[in-house]
Length: 264
Length: 287
Image (tube, rainbow over all chains, first blue to last red; front, side, top):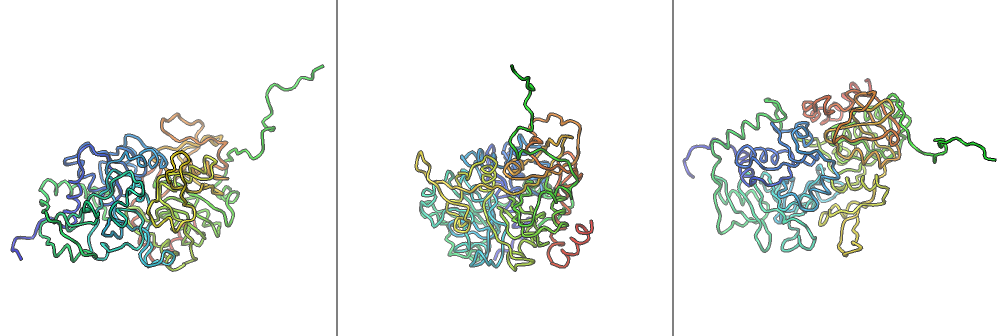
């Protein structure tokens, strides 16, 4: 064990910063609420001022001054280039592959990047836990040019096989996406509080590609419900810079437009 | 010899069953439009959610409803918890930005207060089902659901071969609710409706439905032209009710802000059955 001082940032902050770094300037990004929205808004304030934020409420090019609580907060409509209906959002903008990056999360993720947001348990009819459901995710997963997944990593959530495939990553691996005729490439990165997983180019199994500072391969393996393989060229994520941290914390203070909102 | 007839055709000679909006109080409109066992869509995508109309349904003790809505958030949590629903047709059931819908989960996981049948889609699927319904088509085609386990659970998702290329695509059956209910900012005194801001699938839901009710913030003499606004003519609507604040705790762009504190508080109010029932008694039934 090293004796270096405790970092002045949390694992969650590292995860959000890593996700923001994965967004390049001028990309068109389909944003969900929660961590994806935080990461996207952080990227806009740092290195990607021209990132185009599309929320599924039909707000194209939203530029919120503070973090919205929901995908339909008024600030998104007020600052958007255009507000369009849901049919148009999905049919004209998402379906043909006009969106570069889709951001997804879920209750369960498996080794081939498939996501479950529907039910936990063996039975759909009598689930142990009823989750919210698909929302826009199945088509985001299919049709965005690439998908970033952002999720806290634990053996309970990173599982060998999801209980229910709500949204397809790579199915059972290999070329399954091509057989479905998907427009998009699928999940290219899974960003967690531990590190970053990426699909192995042939099998499409998610392998450990990057570790956040202070985390070991053993930690990553212990936080994964399948036999996680570390990449041969494993890298370390640079820690958050002072600017990244300050900007993120200022942004978090503004959630839902109020300095005191406490939302988990 | 010719008999002189009137120059202009008498509107009474038009085919029957044409709509024309009636402006009436909310309780009258709900009584006139909604029957037990109906399929009813209350739409509004985070914005302009017709809460007041849902509360009227609860007060009128409507039962065995099939509730249709892309995002059955707090509004359907209330209807489900009060025993109004038999079936839910939806694509995302959570409290946006906060977490679970506890009454929805209790109904699915424990059958309380009654078991709830589910017909589950994605947003793209639901939006296209409304669009097909509004277009008078039996189904819609989209690239969707491929590889998803939803296909095996939901009867109204099938696949279809493109007649031109043979490509396999998803087909979803049209939604044609008995009643659609939406909230808007303005109606004029003839019952023409105008809404603006995030517009969701409200237009499609109203045009897909057999009957419709629009609650509005305000009745105005004349609708101001407003680029980008959604217009629904009086002849496509059945009832208009003036209900200022009728979208609370969601909001009406230009009139109110989303009450985020309420959505946060709902997590605690709805978690336990008893606290939920007390809240509904005090704030909806007694209101």
